[in-house]
Length: 318
Ligand code: TXA
Ligand code: MG
Image 1: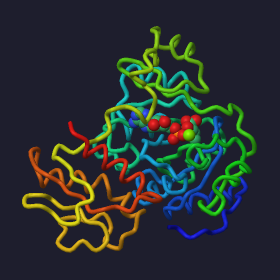
Image 2 (image 1 turned 45 degrees about the vertical axis):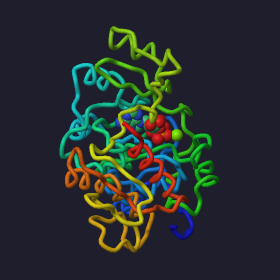
Image 3 (image 1 turned 135 degrees about the horizontal axis):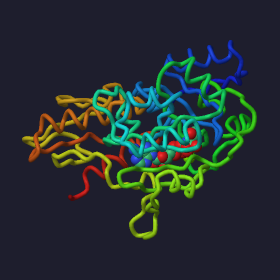
């Protein structure tokens, strides 16, 4: 548990933005306005900062997060842009459009941001305060909407404080958001609308010169976060393992004597979340495709719920 500290309300002037950028560089969380809704920003390259985003929101799952960048040139360092992606970016960025694109190898993003997937959601926000903060910070910001999980998205600094005061370092107050609706999310090649949002689907289709596939069949949702592509290890996985069986690679938590790897030797759930995807990949590499991974029991509260959700899906029969 992170102890409660007062959340600062920061003015969007040069001094305030420089303070906000310093907090972000230190791995703290800062909410900031975009033209759609307020985002809860953290350094997208910092595993601990990203784990704290999930902790602050009380998210029961590691849904992948949107990476915010100031322009398409910087976005190209993190994802591969097809011709259609370039066309949409040129037409609608900065603005309320998020593109899901193939992740670039060696991008340096925390695997928690992409939930271990090889795709990444990228958005270039138009709000001048978001732009100024991104430039002051000088890197990619992971930012889901700045509300507790399951609550409505905030469109004013006061809404952010109502939900997250004491759980995040600061809110940059940029007044009310214009759009008030989250960004439209489009995956490409072929073009699919994953979430309707602030940019009308008709505008996207007109730009592409082709219709967007949408969620026509509710049995097969295209809804973000429900995509089946979440990373699963090739090895089998057993949860709640107090000790390894012969041949198992054992991932420990807390005091796990003889563990091959550890999510957190001190039993810290934020550290465990930050380490989870790295540990799964490492254990997978050691175990090999026909191998076996066992994971020590993880307490089922706070971030432990999201960790256990992820492990359950990795352990499910395939
Ligand atoms: O307007 C917005 O998009 C706001 C502002 C702050 O930018 N952000 C926002 O983030 O709405 P969030 O986390 O509340 O919603 C992001 C959605 C999630 O449903 C997530 O599953 C999806 O984007 N998403 C992120 N990365 C993805 C990926 N690689 N593939 C598919 N869906 C992805
Ligand atoms: Mg949200």
